[in-house]
Length: 304
Length: 304
Image (cartoon, rainbow over all chains, first blue to last red; front, side, top):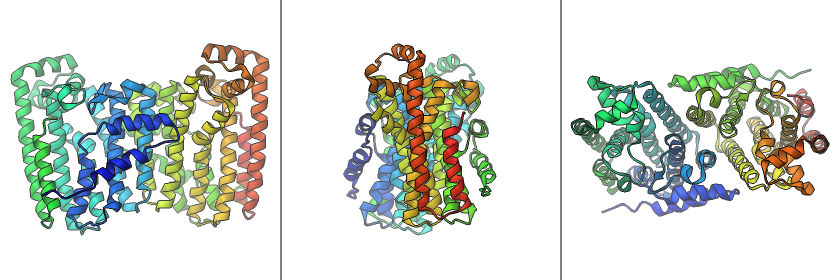
């Protein structure tokens, strides 16, 4: 039986809070926010809140919106750098409105996150600031390692810990802090969220390799093209490290190598999901805890 | 006699706080932060703090650093959109490291502002979040009005209120809040700062028209080229509104028009500085209040 977490209230807030005195910013924000997405991060906030005994969802809803907004800000900026044209099944802001407005839309969404969070005490803001910082560092590290042909497996894990897992951790921390959870429960949740975040990104990278754009709703194959992601890291560790993009693309398009990369990635993701689910034992039994367990399975099994 | 405000402590914090686990981000940040600038915004924070009786500068220094960091973030992003090559007398981050790293450096600086501010209570964060939002809105409005050829004088004032004056207001608000100033003093300071901010931007636009890059340390003439700023607004109101950039450039290079634009701008800036200085009467006499008075004169008289 599903907990009734107030996802619709989050959706409403996402749109109302990103209204701007400058209509263009309301339009670009609504375009990318309305396009949907899986809303995994708001779910993590609200489930962590419920699983640690939170019972005033109104206090947690803005936190759930804040993490989705900052996540969306990074997507809008990433799409400038990647020149992806499809995101969440729609045109990217960059493709539709151009680079300048995409840059400003991302900045606008960052400031909106900050505005929403301003109502909360310092420790909430410290948690999200730390994650925001790691998001940017992870993205920079990725760009740099790919350009330098230095993306080995350790660097890959370091990158995805920063660019993905850190925000997953902040989500459950914020939810649990809002419920005034005991430290032991916060720690169980952050262990869970870190592993789920790592598994999520590995699965995302696998989909980038094997799925097509229609299926996942965004431009695929960008990792390959740019010499980054799961496949690049794997090949580097196998001693096959390509320094030139063309060479990477050639190797990976050889089916055997592709299968091997996917198999290693899947095994790692599976292992992470198991340790994530084990960490949930640190929480009292509840419908919300069961949903966190199910969310971890979904991360592994999703095909888009 | 000058108050001894701890500007060196601000400089030190600017550099230490922008150290990153990703060396590239430390480098790009240090490049733009070391280049200096007038540090008007940190001065405003620290002088507002002192003028309202603050006597524990350690509490105000991080606030002074935070406003300079967010200001710098917007400069780095503006330089991507404007393709300016010179800033604070040095190459822009965009010119030296390229668009991708300039975008990430701006994002990094935004998150660092957020990190520094996370230690402060909600009302501090509400104040800066409001200003951050207006910075982005002002820049967007400017881009949009210039592209649409809709920059009349009212729109121009609306733009500079958001893109410049709003952060000046936040500076004195933060300083005064840190000193636990009475509401009447906060209001006197915000009236002062708004007018100084407006005059600062008008003077900046005049310098963009009449000075060369060596003198002001940044690429000049960009406003003209992009159909925005003081001159574009003035011409639009005179019924000379150019819809094409070439036409604006031609008109403005006609010396008579240029002189007229500069004269109107100077008169307006002078008027603003007078009302700003009058607002300072709402504060008790002090060396810091005298310095705020002098800072307003400097804004008018500066030639770079």
